[in-house]
Length: 416
Image 1 (tube, rainbow, N blue to C red):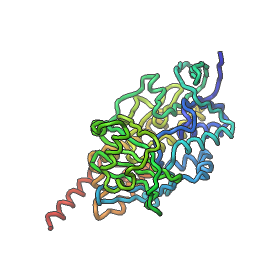
Image 2: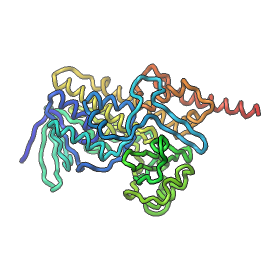
Image 3: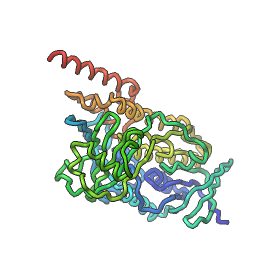
Image 4: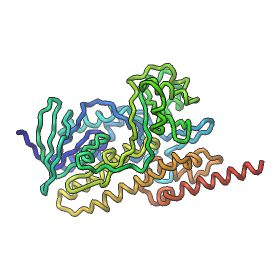
């Protein structure tokens, strides 16, 4: 019986697992990364936020990504019919990165794992975690390879970076209902042969076709573009046919993008993720920490997924390093409370997006430059900056400002 021992087992080799692995490897700990899939592989989550660039820099992964030539994302465009709201990451309340990337995740993730393997990190692909037993000394994990063979690994600590695989939440019964309304997404890639020249062809855009339904358009530097709709699950289910037929019909909802993408062959049969919002009872336990989508996933609308993944991965890795060195760590205050504060901010923004309140602020004219700067910092991922009123007072400020925009609109109409 094959049995291996490491300091830290990391489940999942995506951005969260790679960031954690890079940090811990750099600190001299013995680690092992196990990944159920074989890379490169397709996964959704292709739009990043500036905040995660800090994490790639700190863990020495930035250079391997920067040389790849991914599409630069310097902001985001929101559209609703003739109304347009552009956010420029260089014009935000919080100091930090002014740009990030739009990435085909198959290439992006493999660039990191290739680099980590070159540095001697042990990454085993096509290894599935089927059982975990925790004890006073750590844990014993049962792994199954592609041929069905079993092996066993003991670790002092586990980082679950398995994303939508949600390994430990499933095995330990940690899932709980999300506060976010039930939405689903349908998406694919296309060869963007009618892409406009210049900046227009590179812009990530959220095209709002109704209060709860919107189209994403994420151009990549390789000439392909990710397109996908998000909407209430029942609404997406209401379109007839297979997933290709559903998406073809839904693309007709976008007046702005229909001509650009009509009659283009889909690179792969459109995929559907139903009721994608997830939550957990706890973010950590004795001998483990949950990071990224294995812990919380809110909604694609503000592209927060990868940033939460790398933020939680780096923080958990730092705390594990301290604990393994014999230092005291308060996981509740230093990890759970911190991560949940950021999640709470984005939860408010997601909820108020679908109530329409945030959309009122985005498309209100004339724009308030200071409010826009503060909201832009949130959209850039700087959701722990308590100097930003739209972070500190997020629970009430979005609703309050939306109410004011309604009053101003009523006043303008009454003056006509």
